[in-house]
Image (tube, rainbow, N blue to C red; front, side, top):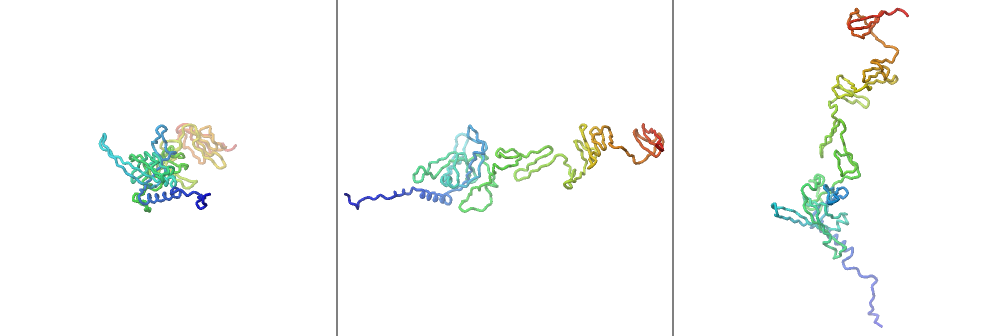
Length: 361
């Protein structure tokens, strides 16, 4: 039987792996964060392209106009490569960047994924990511734990990617500790697509827009960004034609043509293109007091005159008497006048006839 003192005792739990656990990986991450953001890293503005809002071609997989989400400030180790070629038409210069991102910092902390087609701003220039390398470095050789992703970037063409300088890169603002000499732009307010917008021209990026359109007689003058929008009427542009006193009263200081487009021939002109109702005066208790139609009929007390003058009453009064001096006194056909003894009617120009009024019934 073996000596009991030499018996090997198995421990209750195996020893931990040497420097390979989660705590060790988190420690390396924190060290890399400090190095990249405070010592050797350069600040960048990362512009992820919105796949939902950019219209990509089904065949080529590219979008003529790309819509960017708000930029994210990241820190990375940047290698600048300047190439000079002289192949056909003289010297050509091209600037490339190799950006080494801290993968765990981007994915776990900033929820950012490096993709081909996104843009980065380095200094005052924009670069497009054309290639990515996901397998450059690992934690302690563990293939399932990557801590670096590299992106190859080429400088974007002038005007291919635009931002608003007044919002994205203010010229005067307080400095932030640890951001270096070339701070990346701050996050810009991105318009929520679920909101409703009033625009001057159709904008396909806003699905809930309402386009402001000028109706008949109205003009819209857009003053541009930072300017004003002017809405004006091109009808009745003279000042003071109609002035509002309050909610129930107004006055006009010029001639007015209602229903026509020509210059009014009176202070108030009502025009008609047919036998429609032109003018009507209603009373609170008596209904239609005065009514004028487009065919020239005038109704008093009726809204449907059948003759040139249609009086819906049992009496017509001529208040003042008049006596022609003779049967050839001045007069026009149709004039009627009266005095205490006669009724006079002008039957022709300057020709009068009269009828005697009886003294009793």
